[in-house]
Image 1: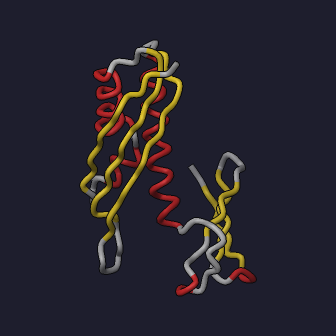
Image 2: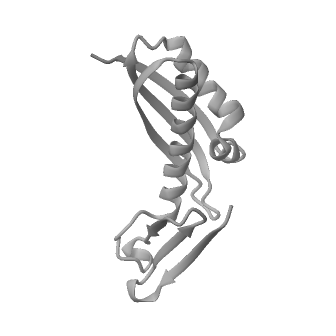
Length: 141
C-alpha cells in the first residue's frame, strides 16, 4: 500500500494525501500550530481510519453470517500521551448496530473477531493504547 502526502504551503500547515486507490484526503493543523483548521488533524484521521477499519469488519462478518444488518455506527473516544510522541494511550469504541433480529451474541462475536484477528489498524494501535469496546443492538423496523 502506498500513499503520497503533499504539503500545501499557501495554507500554512495543510496537507493532501493521495492514496494508492487514487483518492484524496485533506488534513490541516490547529491554528496554534500554524494551521487554519480547514480539515481534520492527521491524528484524527488515524482514529477515524481505525473506526472505519473495524466497522468494515463488523458489517462484513455480520453479513457473512447472513444477519440482516442495516446500520453500523462506531463512536470512538481516545486519550493521548501528554509528552511527545503523543501516541494514543486509550481508545474506547462503542458500536451501535441496527438490523432485523440481529442477535447480540453475533455482534459481540463480530466485534471480538475484528479486534483480535482482522482489524489491522486497531491491532496496531493496541501496541500503545488500551482498547476497549462496547456495543448495543437496535431493532430496525
